[in-house]
Image (cartoon, rainbow, N blue to C red; front, side):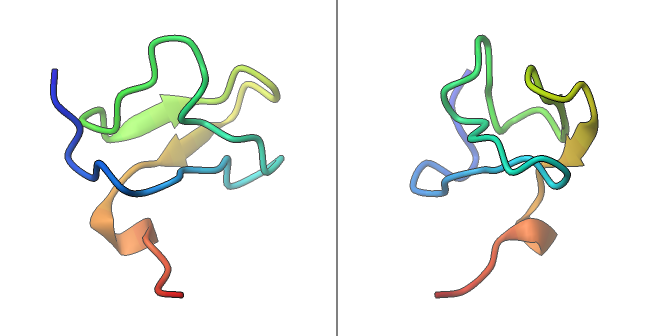
Length: 51
């Protein structure tokens, strides 16, 4: 499955872990459960911060 946001780095909303490198991560899923802390983060355009 193709990423919706190919140039975006995703981080856990709770522990700050880098999500892109977690096993099976794909930003086409709208929610991701962090492998580090087990909490769910939203993966949507609303969560992309401008530099």
